[in-house]
Image 1: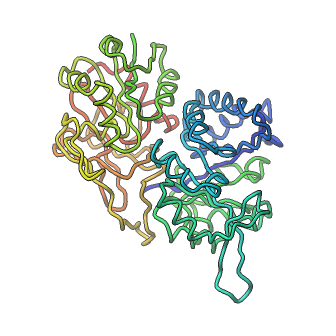
Image 2: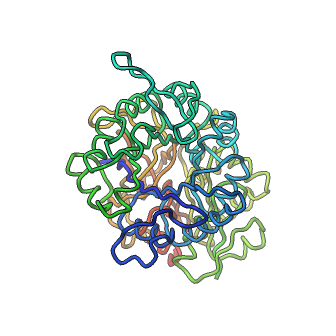
Image 3: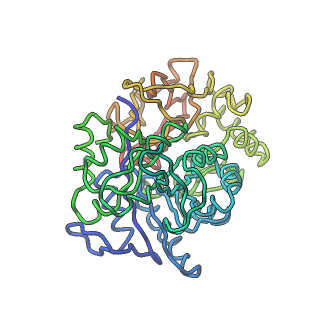
Length: 257
Length: 213
């Protein structure tokens, strides 16, 4: 009996609309983030993460409106990521009602931004997103590097070292995505998850590759993750949040049921 | 009838104000104006980030004296949240040691660096996520909330109150018993975030709005 592991559905939003929509029974508007967030909340999601993929800067105001509307109706933690580059961006999202922001490329471009953000807003709301790919060859000790631009651009930064550095600078949580696994439905990169979970003191969210409920279980039991993030398996109705929670609980994982 | 969320510059005040608006028709204001704070029927003292900054900002905004006065006067219900709970104690270990408001006897301590769960897995600090809150003493704010219900936490320091009769709720984390709900008289304060704890959190806020100590 103790702290529960968390399940976090992740929604990609473009100009205030959920990309590709979701497939819930009885939902009126499959692209409306407020409807979807309410539904996930009713299902027992422990948090919700929004990834803003809005390309043009002018349309980003719609994301702020969206966060504001959701925060007025859904009372679980909300994280917003994508395009967070300045303290002003963070201030705007927190004022709109986000509880945490996730910083990705801006941390790679300027690691001191993480420190500045943590000092100004507190580590509790600063999540650093780490996109990593395995770079070691077969037979070599496993090694991962940080990639940007959706996994296309290598940075030469060692993922485990980078994770430690981000925590030293004030990250309160790490969102770890395997770019090898993202979209494959082959399961998390458990080696990567375990290496980083053991290297740092802050909670780790495992992401990238979930295809079934066993993958969620393995992320926690083998990977050592504190939370698991998934998108498509929940959005398209393959599994519901209660399905996932009960399955994980049956496998001995403490869950909020 | 007004609920004032005391805005001394620290923390996400909008979340707690929005959650209160969700459970009551009473007017909810986020303010640092002493007249409005005096005029309110209920108060919420939030807090987020480092306790040195919270105490420092409370002093800088000249609200420390007012908050202390209101705590002593016991004239209206006050709800402390997160660092707003911790500040009510005598002292915190954070930031090399910080003197707090001293409304309740006790300390704010850091979780140990090597906490482990029953399976030997290292527990993370901050203590982040949904944990069980056990009712230590009965209280009107627990009405309709199950003993052991889960609330959302984010913190690295926890309250250890000296007097058992000021402790209303406890949470176990790796064998450490955190006093996550404390209070006295018209004051109730929680470490967790009721404004982020789904239905049980909203219920607690509703109980606060209806509380007539």
